[in-house]
Length: 373
Ligand code: NDP
Ligand code: GDR
Image (cartoon, rainbow, N blue to C red; front, side):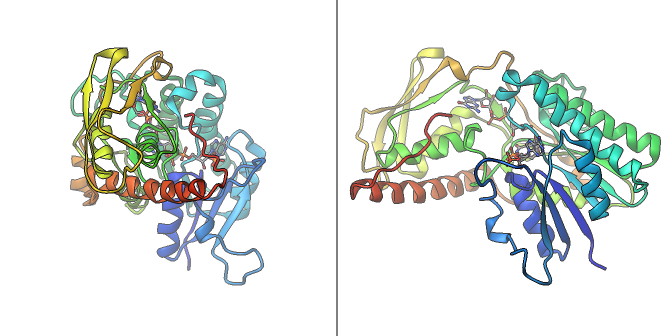
């Protein structure tokens, strides 16, 4: 019998990698996508199956985490063995702008799914994975952070995710549901949303190198993060639901670098060495040397990175470093992709795109790339 999985957030970074993984494993995969005024399925178009095909094993349903009746109807129809709740308003800075919506989707959305499973009498059949986050640690109480480290969330996003974390624990303890939290540290990929810092950097460096943009504006470059690759992390999401008993796990690499370090790594991938000068809001990065042919638009001395205070957050999470020992010991999970390899893959992807745009531009075509982020 094929296992059946339901993924919320299937159109997002993790949802797309997880759907691929589960299809490879022979699952029937159902995903919830939101209605949008333009197409929002580019990350999963390559695994899309035409509705008219027979033997289909990938299905999309319109839905929203703010709509209980919709979620209940989909779960009743799909009768999933596994639910992966990856859907969320996932941008920390945006959560300060839209705190109520973030709480509705990220906190109440999780409750709605758990209640739908219970209401339908599926609590003994359906296993539940919750996309919890290292943002729960916020103002860190211990270095590195592990499953027992106390939480101190620092944004409406993190506070909403804290409710979700505890309601999952509560449904496990109250109703014996197989429900667990993956406390995932930052993970990235070429499919990362363009406004998260790593992708913003790799995309801007590629565009600047190809003459499509002039300068990368960033906020707090001192922030330290434990960055892994999304492919490694979705493998772990699946593993967490294959155990005899539900448990919560920290998923991280155990290494951290700063936002500034990530800029340096990205620039190196296009053959640029940078020199940083100035402090705080006045900090800049200048091109120190250029090797290879990936940055034809630049010359030594060009200023390509500046700080813009609009990207500072009302409350910042300065440092995150995870201890994934429990996942290693209990599940045998070890991340396989280093931050350097991941950065190289992201830059290569963005550079290929930038080169295509540069050719179009050179031949007189108007190219519109969204640069503001
Ligand atoms: P993305 O932002 O790439 O994807 C979020 C997904 O949620 C998208 O499919 C989005 O749809 C969907 N979504 C947003 N709002 C709603 C809603 N109201 N109803 C239904 N679906 C909605 O996030 P990631 O893939 O990076 O992250 C996946 C999950 O893991 C998120 O919950 C995130 O908070 C959490 N997380 C992520 C980490 C990371 O470093 N990536 C680390 C720790 C936790 P659409 O495409 O239409 O916008
Ligand atoms: P984060 O990721 O907030 O950790 O949340 P993000 O990439 O947005 O920020 C990481 C750090 O970089 C600093 N920063 C900037 N961030 C953005 N987006 N844009 C900038 O210009 C910029 N300049 C500096 C930030 O201040 C921050 O310190 C991500 C999301 O995927 C969450 O959903 C997830 O839960 C956590 O990771 C773990």
